[in-house]
Image 1 (cartoon, rainbow, N blue to C red):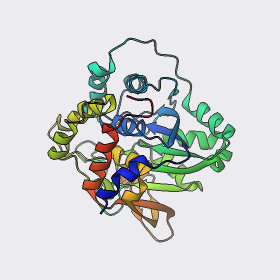
Image 2: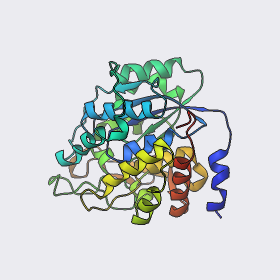
Image 3: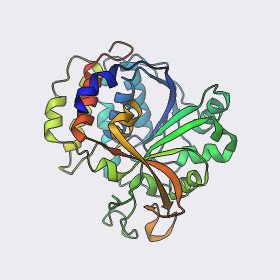
Length: 327
C-alpha cells in the first residue's frame, strides 16, 4: 500500500540535492509549495525566485522572506525577477497575496527586508558556479528561466532537471474566455502568461518533468483535507499551511493542489507514475500557451499521482514533523 510507505518516504536519508524554487506568488498554492519544501531534509534550497504572475511582486517577496524567517531559513536569498509576462492575470486573483502577507503568524517580529538581487543575473551566476547540477522547481511561468537561458545558454548543462507545474495535455485548460475573450480556453495559465518564454524552454535540451492540469485535477483540495490540516498545530509550518489553505475557499471555486503537487513530487517521487511523452506548445494565436500531446513534439516526463489520498497523507506527515531547523 502507498500509505504504509509514508514514514519511509518522509524519513529516508540521502545526499541533499541543490534546488532553486521559482514561483509567481499565487496564494495559497505557491506558498504551500514553499511550506512543503522547507520540511524536506534532503533538499538544499539555494534560493527562492519571485517571478511576476498571479501576484503583486512586492507582497510576494515579503511573504517569501517571512516564511523563510519563520522556518529558521532567513539566510536563503530571495530574488526579484525583472521578467515581464505577455498576458496579465485577472486583478482579483492577485489581491489575496496582501492578505497572506498580513497573517499574524508571519508578523510575529519585525525585520528589515534586504534588497533583492536581480533574479536573472543571480540565476546565471549560481548555475555557472555550481559544482553539482541543480534542480529547478518552477510553479509559475518560464519568464525568468527564459531570460537566463538567453543571457547564458551554457547554464543548461548545470541544470539537473526542471520540474514545472504547468500545461494541460488531455484535459481542458483553465484560461477562461470570461477573462480572456480572445482565447479559446485550451491553455493553462502558467503557460499562457508568457508563451514565448515557454517556447524558449521548449527549444532547449533541458530535462523537463511536467505537472500538468491532468495530474492536479486528480488531487482536489477536499473539505476533509482541510479538516485534517486543521489538526496540524504543533509545528510552525503546519500551522501556517492550515491558515494558507483557508484561502482555497475564499471565492467558493474548485481548488486543487496545483503547485503543492509539484513540490510533493520533489519530496516523494515514488508517489507518482512518470511516463515519457511528446508535447507540442502553441506560442501564439487563439490557442497561445496550449500544450498538447503530439508525435514529434518536445520529449519530456509527465507525472501522474498514483493515489490522491497518499499525497494528502504525505503532505500532512511532513507538516506534522519538525522541519530541519526544528520549527
